[in-house]
Length: 145
Image (cartoon, rainbow, N blue to C red; front, side, top):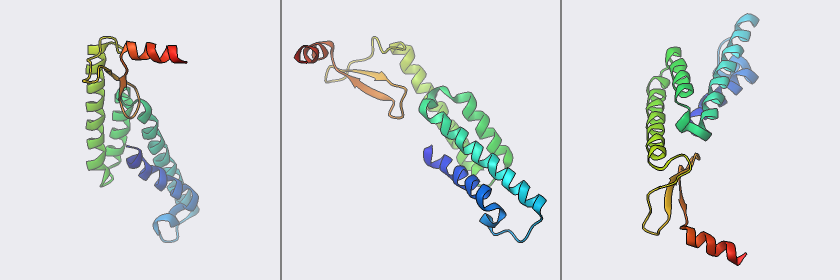
């Protein structure tokens, strides 16, 4: 996701700084130059908004779908394939997170045990899963410090 959002961020920044010369447009009027830079700012904003969904992607369904719809409505070639696929991916992440939370509760209580005796719990982080040591291991570590 970070890489996919880097495209509009880079293109938007380039368009704002370099104007239409960033895409080899012929000489244009100042009004057209201003409009091209404005559209580049929108592109930059959309990329940054996609990036803002990453830290809690599983809870950002509405924002993610709104951004995806904006890009699809813009009708740009590659985005017509990539963005809907990213929106589907976000929905799957959200569904898995919801399933884990409904099974374990928001704090991970009652989470299933792994083979090592650790609990597997959902963590709102890009890696999404963490191993929590058994209580006796935590108590032993607390007594050694």
